Length: 407
Ligand SMILES: *Cc1c(COP(=O)(O)O)cnc(C)c1O
Image (cartoon, rainbow, N blue to C red; front, side, top):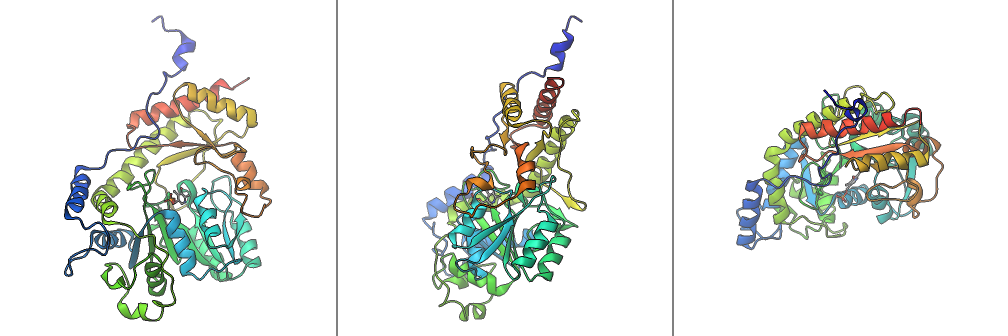
């Protein structure tokens, strides 16, 4: 064999597209065109004896999520703002949230004019329980909007113990954890309300959209009226009974953010594929993680005991690199076709941002989070990648790490 030994260590470039999602299943396309042919696009525009597609979707999602009530709405961000309003968060109230999350989270807090108080995250990318306990004690009785950012679940038993001790009400942001579990229980079923996104990069795709789920009848009734139900709330499928609405229906504002039947039809057809897709993500994640682990220089977050993640993206850190080194790391990966996002960038790029770039939030000192994010990278895992593709991407990342050795 005349293969150059050096070159054999350099994987060939990857040519996949990190932003390419799968097409929607044919059943979804048929369901959408059926809705369009019917002309009944608005969720309350349906025959009297029927449930609308949006309501049918809510029933299906509530069942899958094992919750009593589900509201389908305009976006995940809208679901979070609605959750805060339903809980009665008022201007200048404090809302605790993790310092490592995406901009829609502080944005939802800002949209109700509340003050975000940021909690440190650990090297495993979950909320720091000591910092949470300290801030929960300081702001007793407030709401915690807990973002399971990039799919990492904290020890939810401990989070809920802290919440109980300091009387916090908990909203879970499950944008990246639809289907993830802690101690066998689905993420979203620990707090008072859970919010999900069905935006294109999440686990089911309607372009834009979201769900709010809860087992609390009062909160569900408020969320439904808030979402713009007019006085048509009795047409919902996964809603509390009409009496629950009696006391809140006239005091709750209509802040329209409904889901229409077109997007509901897309999502309803995808529900049949959801469990299988979650497995497909995890197989891909495992393959990429295994390949990355070949370089022992990259720090991968360890899942908290008893948690099961859905690997729709992968994170790793390069603790031995400074900011210039991180830029160089991204450049070398990009040259080989691997698109990384770097959470350490002081200016926000694409979907990454740091708490310091949310200028509408009062500046806060979070040395641990800043240290973790300074060398944190993110790779998307779209289902259009084969398992082999994911191994290939992992090999490239590992080889780039090796290329820094002795540099
Ligand atoms: C996507 C996302 C949301 C919700 O986003 P929308 O685009 O409003 O649906 C919330 N939190 C996180 C962490 C997200 O990534």
